[in-house]
Length: 239
Image (cartoon, rainbow, N blue to C red; front, side):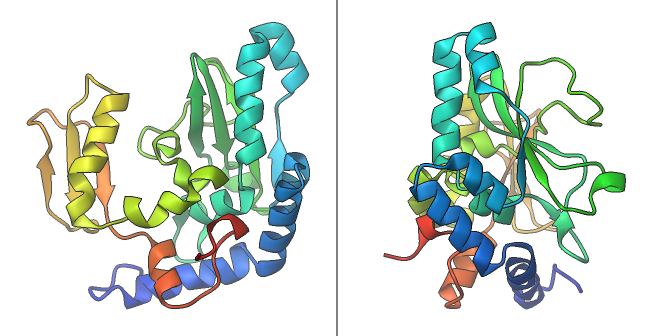
């Protein structure tokens, strides 16, 4: 199935199919209920996440303040929402393998989500870990991917910010604000703004050299919601 049709129809149908099979309603309902009950570990289990971190060890080795920040992120994590937004590959909509995505940064500690390498991805599980700049076992890419900045897009995983989705996905007119967010986070970088899909035009927000990218295209969640389909997570149901 093509996902780059000029009128967007094929791409929309592609994402609808992902929602149906990769993030089914029972997963959403169970993960949401457990999260609302304060059981973030249970919510992760319901959404098929593995938690590869130890908050007690983190408090002992890196201090209680750092552990408290990570714990707060986990308490507000909507794992079903994150599963929906994790990068995927065509044609089957499987999770992009061997990927590390930064969710939040606290000093030199990064809360990250990782997908398994291709040879181990049959279960389509996602793991949560804390990365401090060092190695990460046998994961092929332990360093957070610079093109998937979920730390700058908390509405894609943080239940407290899920209501920002529509405003943050406002299409080409939103590009300057998104570029400003990226530049504030990485003040030494210029920003290349890509309008539309792979064949879209681009421009530098501040002039060359362009390094990091800020994509500006209406996200599938907004478009599927306009079609009247089920909200991705209980935290972002229409009001």
